[in-house]
Amino acid sequence: MLNFCYTILRSATAKAIVGSGLLPALGIHHRNKYNAYRLADDLMEPYRPFADRIVKETFAKFPDYKDLSKEIKFELMDILTVDIQFEKVTRPLSVGLSITTASLVKCYKGDKKKISYPVLK
Image 1 (cartoon, rainbow, N blue to C red):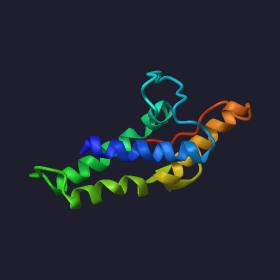
Image 2 (cartoon, one colour):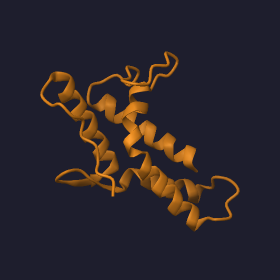
Image 3 (cartoon, rainbow, N blue to C red):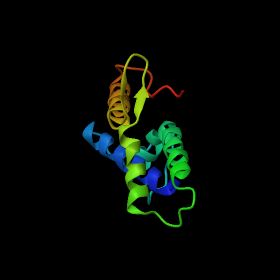
């Protein structure tokens, strides 16, 4: 479950990166030249606790699961709609990723000094 949820999160992060005009292959800390999603791997790290929470909740609903059924996958897809809190606003996680990537662009331009990440509760 966790790997599946992280894959959803990683692909949504890559989509937000491309939507902000950046290249997902140009990472900040991740440097493996064979990894085409280095920047996605960098930016998704603070979002992993949200995936962990969804997996925990899904596991509680399906404690005897043997494989990833359609129902379980559907539950894990909720990661994209989880409400997350930034300093002043609450947005779905998929929108929050765009906020994070847009703030990274502002950092690269010198308009901002810190990337915007959600507040963990």
